[in-house]
Length: 85
Image (tube, rainbow, N blue to C red; front, side, top):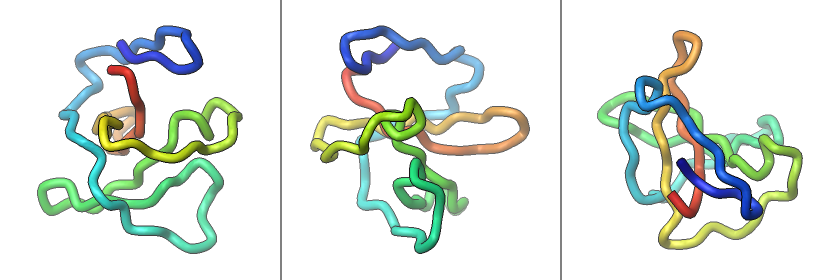
């Protein structure tokens, strides 16, 4: 469970591969608005999405306590930047 704008959101445990503190992300030029960048996760380059942007809100500044949840969803692996986990 994590919170966004005071509302709780849940991700099924089976979908979560791992979670770690937000690292430096590699920018991707000409990408979709909700893509924050990519990260090397144990030798695999995965896209990292900003949850605020996914929900249609402007992307905010990231904080040291933000977390990347690495998810396996629909045969794809992706990261999701969240806070208040």
